[in-house]
Length: 543
Image (cartoon, rainbow, N blue to C red; front, side, top):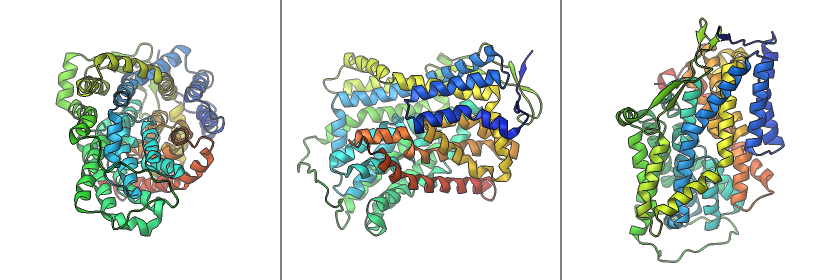
């Protein structure tokens, strides 16, 4: 006999919701107050969720264990598979010395600090977010800006603010893919809606960065570059998210933006060069030691990656690859053994749990092949070094791997026990205003976990349940969870720690938090209002 979910075990909607939120409170306390490591916080949060699911929601032990393992399995594949291969490609470019050429090529485009911020923090940071994500772009771009002579606080703060527009599509679209997996909604549909929200933010981020650095008047001096960067990025983000999927918006938007800015600088230069008052200048040699061929070669691993990921994302290619090898199994001890009830389902309905192992068509496999194809392009870097680098990357990411697996386990135990639905039912009390609060949940989730992916895993089920209860398109609220989440990245304790470490500002986390807090709140409210409008008067904007 199937186990039936109970959404109000304490006979009080508010009381049950508060108890269901205990694992989230634990995550908040461990991350924001105790500043515990991610895997420690994830372990305590997941453990508490399992205990509550069994003791309060009455979930059988076997189902609770199976649901947690099911989530962890999704965390390991395809998510961790993408993370490991993407970071591996980056690590190879660093070890081979090609990344120094990439940095030099970007720095030589302009010596104006405003334009350098747009190039490196916004455009190049978006490219790294799209390929690796998970803290990598801020670490790279902040250190690059300091190396160019930026004030450390501004280098860190600017990179955190810039790392908003691309986050939802980071790491080859993992946040959107996870949102689809944990909610059962169509991933492409979610991608399309996010692609009709974030471009409104993306188009103003370059101006936002410049105004933050030098004020509105001096920012207007580089208006042509600001406009080109914003329009190129936002336009590309809309096109690829709506007509290709969640895997390439960041990569292609960054490439288009960089090309657009390079072409602009061939015919336009700012009237004056702006630098920070009192900053130490770092002069580059008049002539680069690298030829055009060197620069193209250095970028080749990422060019190959972009091409491979593009083709891997095409439905026709996916079908061919899945025809070679793809296995879908009913998750043992869980599939259809739990029933949803009203108000989450119109009538008792079995809760499916299918696990797909598509090793060949997975995005991580495309990245792995990209890295292997790029090895011969890197001088003095053979396959023996590449394989050794891959093993070092596995070791480097051992704790993030555990964290991701446990966070996905936490998400699924909350989903299958009914705890997410309990929280969602409580939020239905906001009624028609719920679309306004949907991005705030994503913002909170990213603040707690440091990851838009983890936030979607935590709150995706609740967003869907609440939207269905109040009569709003669940794709919109799930998308808003991801769109709102990007604005919480800049104040996440993990992101701030990465930024301070990469700019030699360890111990000044409080200063950086105060630097970014106002920007985070303002951007979040922008997404909240947009989501509310799209739910009702601007519903025609949705696919």
